[in-house]
Image (cartoon, rainbow, N blue to C red; front, side, top):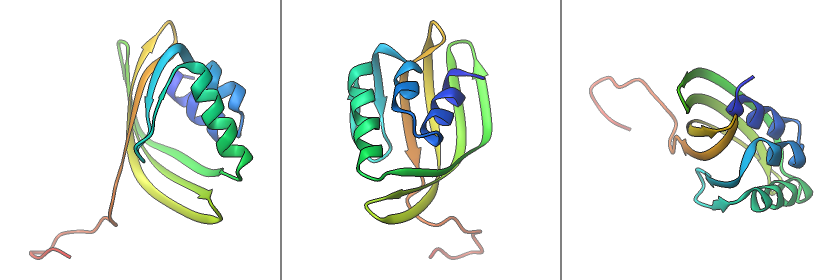
Length: 122
């Protein structure tokens, strides 16, 4: 298991302690929705608060995964429930490791349904 796959699996397991153990003490996490979380304690507080408020990760399926040196890149399909609404999207993560833990992580998400182009745009 890699640092990123451990982090993803911890979110699926709804385990804030495990999520915090997957990152360095001075990590920098940029979520695709905009928030930035700095430090292990903040990451733990974010995850625990998210779960406590009813957040559920139903699926976080990695569809492509590359590890090279201290970098890890993954494309994925994500589905969760937040504020009573179930939603999903495709996205990608770029992470940097330090001593086997995530030092920096940045997520990106698609913002519109994907479609095959046939000469015109939607």
